[in-house]
Image (cartoon, rainbow, N blue to C red; front, side):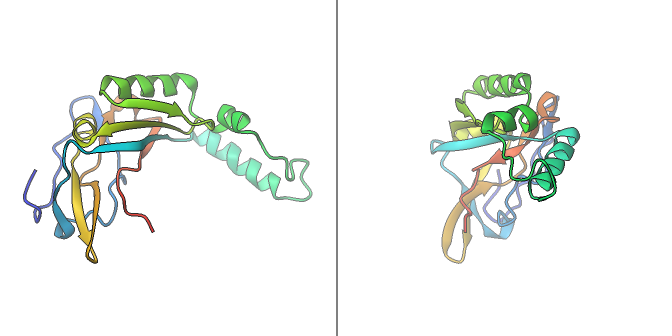
Length: 174
């Protein structure tokens, strides 16, 4: 890792891994970088978020359009969280593979959402950085100190078809 004014250029991901594009907050910019976050700091409520397949996306788009169309038999026919998980959530085997990988990294794996769209976990900054091959840095914006990933996280290539990204890896909130 470089000085706070240097851009953090991630090393290529480890063999068999891919970087998750668009997972670095836009305010995590080199000129605002104030150095690394304490590796012992604990972060809870982190989440791996799953992608929808193209078929699931088409299905949900059709369902939503039908639910708001007064002429449709599906008008205002809402689905339960369990129905949503079955139709639009990650496949149980993909959730299991993701949970197993998180546990292998030493993360405290919490729960899978009822919708089947995410798995929450906790970790220290050091664990997060090692597991996802990234760095967490502090950033100063308008006199306020924040933290965020300085580079895109890496995940195993085997999970790249089902993982959209990581959530709650920064504290830039409105």
